[in-house]
Amino acid sequence: AQSVTQLDSQVPVFEEAPVELRCNYSSSVSVYLFWYVQYPNQGLQLLLKYLSGSTLVKGINGFEAEFNKSQTSFHLRKPSVHISDTAEYFCAVSDGDSNYQLIWGAGTKLIIKP
Amino acid sequence: DTGVSQDPRHKITKRGQNVTFRCDPISEHNRLYWYRQTLGQGPEFLTYFQNEAQLEKSRLLSDRFSAERPKGSFSTLEIQRTEQGDSAMYLCASSLGEGFNQYFGPGTRLTVT
Image (cartoon, rainbow over all chains, first blue to last red; front, side):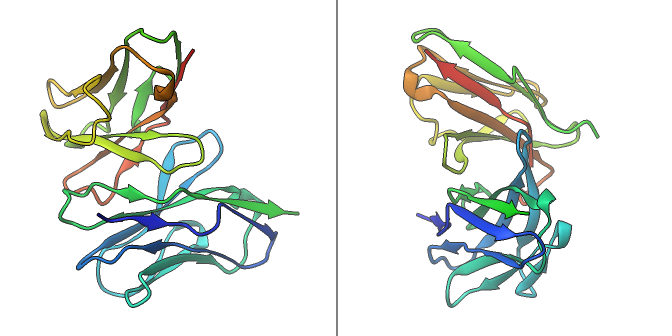
């Protein structure tokens, strides 16, 4: 069965510094990958997704992620974070054979230090 | 676009009581999903509907959990004989067609005392 690992439960970073949030998934023949963001007291919002094509995917709010099939990773990056990026970030995977059920990581809290 | 709404936002109940949550998806979305999220974890898939048909329910946590979407619009999730372990956030999402873009509601937080 598909599984997702987010290696860091919390990532503290100074404002305007770059950040990388890591996500690894278990191997599958074909896979679709997603990053969602959950701001405090709000619902989950889709940040970006990889379905096919270019392995570098750009999302909202200046985030991007790179699909690496050989390392089964889909790390999320932003070159310069802002205080408003404080949120929990979830990586999710669907293998396409499961009627698009999403399997989720445990989440990474991004903490922006002023 | 009014988004996905869920009602109630919070529910406190005593152990053994039944509870029902409602989800109203985005109006043109034909797929509707239910998830459970416990503290420190990502959402856990429970079930989903395509229109009024429940296409996957094997992940419902026990036979105390049931969901309906009678007219292919809103959905309800019922938990019978609640237990303290049912305390969690219950999330609903909807999508148009394939589930690549799931839009989430704010969730219903259940506390079982």
